[in-house]
Image 1: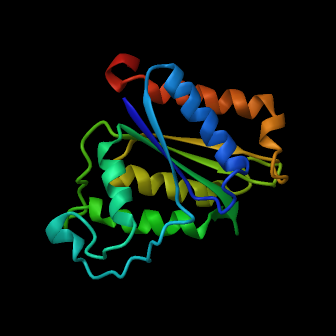
Image 2 (image 1 turned 60 degrees about the vertical axis):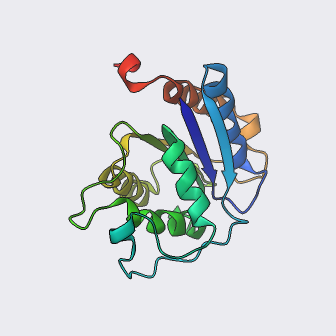
Length: 190
């Protein structure tokens, strides 16, 4: 099993990163190969809506997204990590998700291989974990439509300070449990 985590937070060592590290450490302890990719420093342009990807299966723009595609293609599971900005995922992750349009065929069926799993991990200052559920459901729904299976959602609520997640055993346990679940091949889990 190979698990890729995409950290879209502009804070390279904040709550989102800390929790993604917990996911990956637990997955690695369970036998998975893991990788963390920092999205914010990458040069990724927004989708241009030119449908050039429908012929080749890859976006025709040559930027850092090409390396993201390679890593997603090689992964068995992808964890998308973002802080909540303006009631949903941040612009950095939204840009990546828009560019995943290349994983759709022209008829909107998925090009992703069956069994590729994902999770959405978000960190928010708001203490109510359901406060932004509408926007998060749109994101998990888009990942499912794209062909990711068993999309899990982990909301880390009430973490406004840069190191708040590290002081929360409940969030650490939830992140580590997610990593353990993702490390188990779907056929072994079911």
